[in-house]
Length: 246
Image: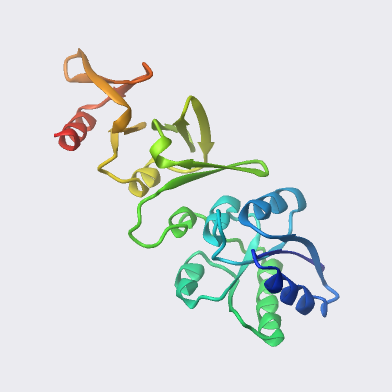
């Protein structure tokens, strides 16, 4: 079967090496060459490659962030000059991990692995992809939202609140709403707890946006944001909020 490949690397010499190595295979078609992660997301959306040869250290979006955005849509072979990412790569079930500089024989081995994966239609496990985009223990600094072939990058400092909506979460920022398929629990774990508080089972609040709290029934409160938005505050959420604000 023909394997459609997209090459993603911010360095032209690295793309050239891959292009030359891949030219030896009649069953491999290079459908795109991407110089950054945004181009990679667009290529996956528009061209539907079977396989990404994906660099990790790239400006603006790194390889793990690209993987978070594309989820299980395409198989990935990481291609990098750094061995420190290997464990994270295999934790998200990458097909293989090529350490630069690599030989044509090593690439052949990785392609064999990819063909086996494609033949069995085994896909990446997506549950931990968002966490894989950050070093262990690091808190989220920006939210990546895929909108078709476009990517929105939202600094967490610009978030007003996050709301659970069925199988999605809605990030509210600067008057706009962005949906992402993720659980509110995962978002809560990723955010800095000194800045973002779970005030309700369905809401996480950026405390910088809080104008005041109002009591509107016994043991029931509402958070009034600076823009006038009202959010419900549960009893446990009120306790967590008070603990952070004190």
